Amino acid sequence: EKGADVTQYNKDETGPLYHAIKNGHVEIVEILLTHEASLVHVPFPLFSPSYLLLIIFVAKGYAGSTPLIVACENAQFEIADIILSKKVDVNQVGGEKKCTPLHAAAKTGRLPLIAMLLLQPGVNETLQR
Image (cartoon, rainbow, N blue to C red; front, side, top):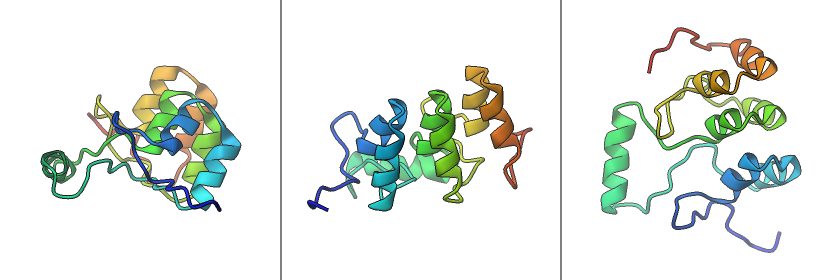
């Protein structure tokens, strides 16, 4: 409401949504999503050399770490549920390790999070990295 840019990324290519998810700040995540924070991670300025690399990565099925992957990597069940309610691609490959949200959740060993992902329509539990 004060005009802050909720899509602004800092020099390490993370933004307010990433930090809110990683630190488990549910209310802040909800506020940022209400103000149209992106659920697709595209941190690079248009037409920069990094942006051109991003085009190649996306063409190969790899995008930056998505908010859902960040939530799953950090075992943020409630935040993952909020993000899933926005109808994101549950099979999106991303992050440095090129994993899906299900891969990220499995690494945490949190069964409720894994079960929630497995119950999503269209989830591919056999997807290979």
